[in-house]
Amino acid sequence: MKNLFFTMITLMSTVIMSGQETEKKHSYGFLANAKLGFAKLKQSGFVTINGNVNSGDFHFFYSLPSGTYFSGGIGLLEFSANGVSGGESYALEHSYLRIPLYINRSVSIFKEQANNKINAYAGIGIYGNTLLKEEIQTLTTTFEEKNRGWNFGLGFNIGLTFEVNDYMTLGLGFDTQSDLTKMKKDDVERKLEAINTVNFIYKLNF
Image 1 (cartoon, rainbow, N blue to C red):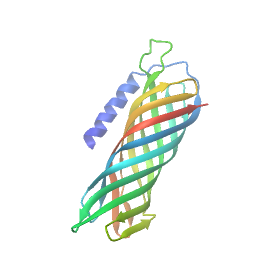
Image 2 (cartoon, helix red, strand yellow):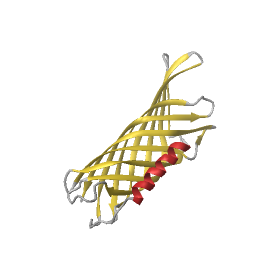
Image 3 (spheres, helix red, strand yellow):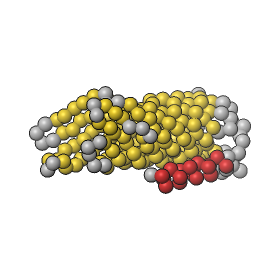
Image 4 (spheres, rainbow, N blue to C red):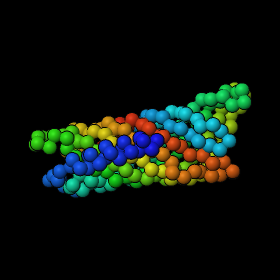
């Protein structure tokens, strides 16, 4: 995970250093992300569990003329995994509510072309995270608990966007996140690590 974070920081630095001031105006709008990927769940009393991630975020953003923009909003993340414990198969599902806050930088790839609509972006941010519901299903029973605590994490993103017109932008990117602190409730500690996702982006400018 440390190597992945180092790689992301290097790529972000490349994007920032290659930036060039433009005549863009201040702008604001909404940003929606659909994310698919993988993560690892670490929980006291259990081995590390590898699972799938299905996530979505909805952000409000404010962009500066330099290409730097700030975004914050709300998101939902579903973590699912299958395993065997004590000789019995189980299916695990976690539903998280997330509150992200990011700072991003966007630059033109082909700066010499007046009509260039393709941009590279990179960003870093933090998020608050709460486990809304935990559900464990076996062949004989279903176990469910709600409101399992809060924690905080750190994330990096990088990708490409295409300006369809003055108001709409589509993009594709990569995001890596990891909880920095553990959720603690009823003597159980847990956190998600190596949350790596492919992001599908829809951006609406005003």
